[in-house]
Image 1 (cartoon, rainbow, N blue to C red):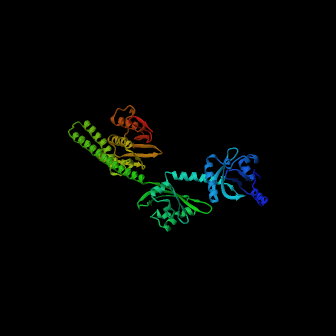
Image 2 (cartoon, rainbow, N blue to C red; image 1 turned 45 degrees about the vertical axis):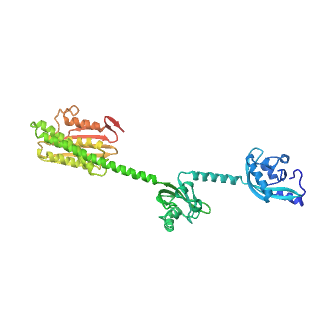
Length: 468
């Protein structure tokens, strides 16, 4: 390729052949930037024709923002004899192509020139830019990120967050291994620990540990460790989360929960004591009552209060205040009722079948009062005058539906008895408590009396509002 004012060079044909055979760009220009020689690769990349390039200076071929840097490098090449520079060649269409140029100063015919050879590094630049974006993302990550060689355990990368928390400089970290910041692991122990990652048995390891700072202090972390394998290296990447604040909050939460548990236990204890006082007062008052029907009302009230007292007593005795084992409670309650009424009848047997069902106190109290009411009525009425009476209590649960069945083989109700219209205190209370549970009440008479209460613990009425 010939340009204007071609210098007289020895062996020009050989030189021209060498220029044309260059795989990259070749350009020769003087101190003023005038281009004298170039190869066809310049025309290919720039999009300018041979005639157009003749009228251009070398600075015209690069991105405007790179021109000052290019001029400084040209001046440096003339001073030192050679220099390198990465520049963006700007094509005729406005596209930028990244080149790595080497400038060599030569003296020909008493004139100073620069011989420039360049290779296209656009793909390399894009890959480098992509890596740089990844690097910047890693540096800005709120989590601490550690990378180390799986074979040597040497640290190969520590992001800004980790460097700041650990307190080590980049220079110090270059000479450190993973075990230097994990004092609880010696090299052999750590290699055994990461072996499941190396042999592919696990994709990641998640664990809590502590890391050693440069000042000798330690901080608790949670680490997610994964292995990335390239052609020539296995790298373990640790995503590190400082859990110091989280552990402190968990400790405070546990302390707060413990305080609340103690307080709740004390509440149950005091409620139990207060109910016991109410029961005692009612009992004392009943001694002054001469009317048997009034005295019976006092006894019924005492029994109901006792049923609630036992719930608070059992909750106080256990560690978990949220739920009550209602099967165990039924045995205690029915034993209490039996002890109070056994002398009034000839012989009564009780048969209790209850799954391992737990109720919260909102469900337990109405259930307890229902059972207390039905069992007491069975002793007082159904079994009265019977030589042998059997009272059965069954509590079952299927999914969220509970079924409470209280039955006896006693005398039953009168023929014209209507449970819906009954104004008796006992059945009125049972109906109201069943409504409170959001349940249904069925009464059957077949060789005795059968009460069936069905309710869903996920749907009940609390304060007259349906709660899902």
